[in-house]
Length: 250
Ligand code: PTJ
Image: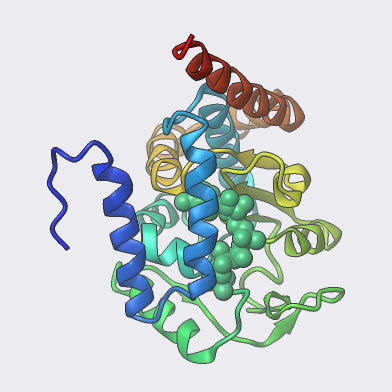
């Protein structure tokens, strides 16, 4: 479909097209389209921009990944559909593997997502040879070289149960979720309330800037970070944005 650049919702419509195309290619599940709609709604009431609290979380998330012994970037269908190239670029800069880990289980879709990521020249883990005990969903099945032994995991667009189980297995979780009220958002160590299409490019910039920093400097970024305060600011930003918009109608 041809979307004119002049369309006021050009970026949002292009993102939809990208996801719909990924769905047609078999990377994304129908449920992923619904999940994206929920994300779009939160993005709308956050003003469709990377707010200061999001940038702060993106910076802390990058610092945590750079400090990790075994960082892993977890990729599901929506992430592959929207930012395959960018997440691979981030993986290269922070020297972390990417692992395909999906909620709606399908060996074929897992293979397709892995192939899509490999096009961008990164190491992709997708073996089903380890289990995160305590989790019912397919996401319990992980790669023994990746999430299983990771100390810090980036898990964008996550479901609450798995975030909980990753935490129970002693891992630090960095998530990207436009819904600051979700269980994942509340449970993660670092919650990036931003659209993944903006968050990953921002994280690439931070990673380029911070990759040569010494550990102490990175540790200071992590230590001064407060996830509860970031979530509070995100919720209040929604309230303020809505109040402002309502005010325009007075
Ligand atoms: O590929 P699979 O099988 O792993 O499935 C992927 C989905 C996304 C369907 C699966 O992880 C799922 O059901 O996720 P949830 O529980 O719906 O959570 C997704 C969260 O991501 C929701 O809180 C959405 O608001 C949020 N979200 C959706 N799109 C975006 C987003 N956050 C940031 N950027 C987005 N573009």
